[in-house]
Amino acid sequence: MTTHASDPYTALPARPVDPALFTEESTYAPTRRPVELASTLLPDAYTSPEFFALERERLFANSWVAVGITSDVAEPGACIVAEVAGRSVFVTRNSRGELRAFHNLCRHRATRLLDADARDVGKRGRIRCPYHSWTYDTDGTCLGTPLFEGSDVPAGQEPIFDTSVAKGFDRADYGLLEVAVDSWGLFLFVNLAKDPAPLATQLGDLPERFADHRLDEWVTQRAVTYDVAANYKLIGENFMEYYHLPWVHPELNQVSRFSDHYRWQGPGMYTGMCTTPVSRNGDAGGWDGLAPLSTLGPQDADSGRFVWLFPGTALVVLPNHAFVLFNRPVAPNRTVETAVLLAHPESLESPDAEDGVEQLAKFWDLVNRQDLEIVERVQEGLENPAYRGGRMCFRFEEPLHRYQNMVIDRMVGIDRVPGGDEDAMTRMFPDP
Image (tube, rainbow, N blue to C red; front, side, top):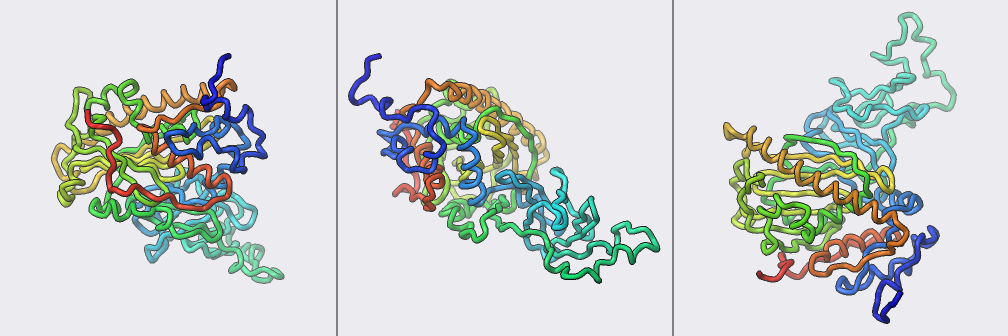
C-alpha cells in the first residue's frame, strides 16, 4: 500500500488498543488536534468492554445525568426509577415537595425496592421492601423493621418482630442511601458522586439561553422506547451534525435547510446548534402542528434549538414543542433509548391540539428510526478491526470534536468545562 508522509492514518493507534492505555493522554493525540486536523475518537471507545466499563464509572457515575422529566414527579410521593452507570436509583418528592433521590435498594439485604415502572410510592409516602417489609419514607428515613403499621405482621405475633431490643442496632443508622438530585427546566438530574459540583457548573449558560421558554412548565405528551444495536456515543454524534441530512433524512431535509444552521453554544458540558428560521411542514410533515408559545421573543419564536447534554441526553426545543432522547448505555454495542415528546400547556389549548401532537409524534418517530438505522450500520463498521479511525470534517463536525474531547477529559481524569464560541450564534455553513 502506498502512503503519504502527511497521511494521518499512519499515526492512528493500532487495534485493539491495550485497555491499560485508555486512561493515558497520549492514546487520544489524534483527536486532541484542532478540529481541522483531528481524527475521530478511537474505535475501541465504541466496541471495547473494558472502555465501556471505565466510561460508565468516569462519565456516568461522576456527572449530572438527566434521568427523567420534572412534571413526572410534580406531586409528593410521585417517583421515577432510572438506571445510571448500572445502578438502579429512584427520584421522588417528599411531603414538603422537595426532590429526593436514593439508591433503589433496602438497607437490610439490598433487595430492590421499586420496580422499573413504578410511578408513585403510595398515598402515604411509604417505600416498603417486598422481602422483609423494612419501610422508609420519602426522606429515606427507616420507619420500621417490622413491627410497623401495614407490614402485614400476623396479629398476635408482633413481639416476635420487635427489633427494639436488638443490640447495637438503631434504625436511624439504616436510612436509604442518598443520591444527589437537582432539576433544571424540564429535566431531573442525579449525580452518583459523593460530593459533586453543582449542577449549574455542568449546565453552564444553558439556563440563561433557555430562560424565555419556561421549560419547567412543559409536560410529556408521548414516550416511546427503542432498543438500539449501537454505542450511545454514536447516537449523540449523529444528533450533533447535519452532514448526513440529504442522504438519511430526505423528509427532514425539506424543513431543515443547510443554510439555516448555526452553532449555538457557550460554556458548559453540552454541544449546541440552532436552526433559524423554522421551516414550515413538507409533504411528510415537520415541526408545525401546535401553536407556538406566545411569550417567546422574536428570535426564540422562529428558532429550533438542538442540545446534547453531556454525557448522553438530547434536547430539541422548538417554539411549539420539545423532543428529548434519554440514552441508557447497556453494552458497548447496545443502548436503550427513550424518546419523549413534550409541549407547554398553552400550546395544547387549541381544539385540534391532539391532532398536532400526533403529527409531531409520527414525524419524530420517522426521523429517529432513520437515525437509529444508520448508527447501527456505523456500529457494524466499527467492529471491523481494519478501521482505525477517520478524519473529522471540520465544517460539519466541530460539535463532535467538542464532545469527543469532553469524553477524553473524563477518561484521563481531567475535570473541566469547555468554553463557548465568542458569538452567540456562529453560522455552520457558508451562504449558498
